[in-house]
Length: 365
Image 1 (cartoon, rainbow, N blue to C red):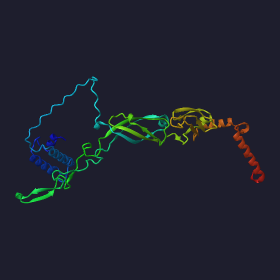
Image 2 (image 1 turned 30 degrees about the vertical axis):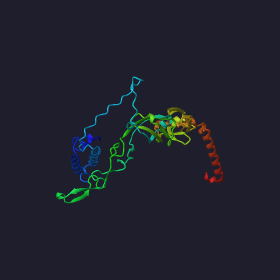
Image 3 (image 1 turned 90 degrees about the vertical axis):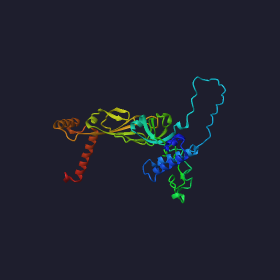
């Protein structure tokens, strides 16, 4: 705040007398002191009034001066310089225009497919920095001595006819004797303005849950906030797959029981899409090589294990029952003997058990 704005803050024209300055200050203090004014802006307005009063007193402009203004000193002659370039040199960056650098920790949730193949995530956010000038207090240190009471915390008040003087608590400082000077960088909040950022973070393939990635500020797309990101990876539970510690992906899926018996081919889901799989009626577990999760970050993939569950209908129509009976008869050998060696072995052991039982207890047969 310069002297011109200081006079305007007190409602005075530049060049007002010391008496007018003090009278205006007392009037505004009586109106805006927080002990008398409960409005939200009373504290800030009171601070500006005190700042304006202090600036005017320190400048000496409130005291009349008979001395004429000094003549401006003519500038010293400058030696000629050889031109080096037609373009003017770039001015150095101002300190208040420097963009603070900040490290932000964030979590990034990825699907199993994104973690396995890698992806790019657009991350947006905002940061609010603590004001370094005032260390987050909102005011400067040390506190300045109150000008109206000269640091005593009390002011004199004349009684009737000036016979007696009484001392009252200073309204400007509330009797403390000191006033806080609002920090100009954060406007008394202790925080700087909100800065927004947008970063395109490249996630390499093979990251795992709990991994930490660092993204530097060079990838920041907003000049308002130079942000370094520290990303912690979290994997979202998958509806179809589970991931083992050895990076093997497992998938359990139902299949048509008759297709499984007939050795048909089906399509199974993997991290990279659907893959063909030939069923075998004597197998329910199949291993697809190098179709799983990367063994190491940026490394080759592990295996994808598919476990099928043959599903048969709970009810059959009359025509389906007839066809099923025909199939059973066709699969059975002559005189009803089973064609599969497993069934033949079972039937042979069953008949031997019946003969042994009959020999021990003929009446049981």
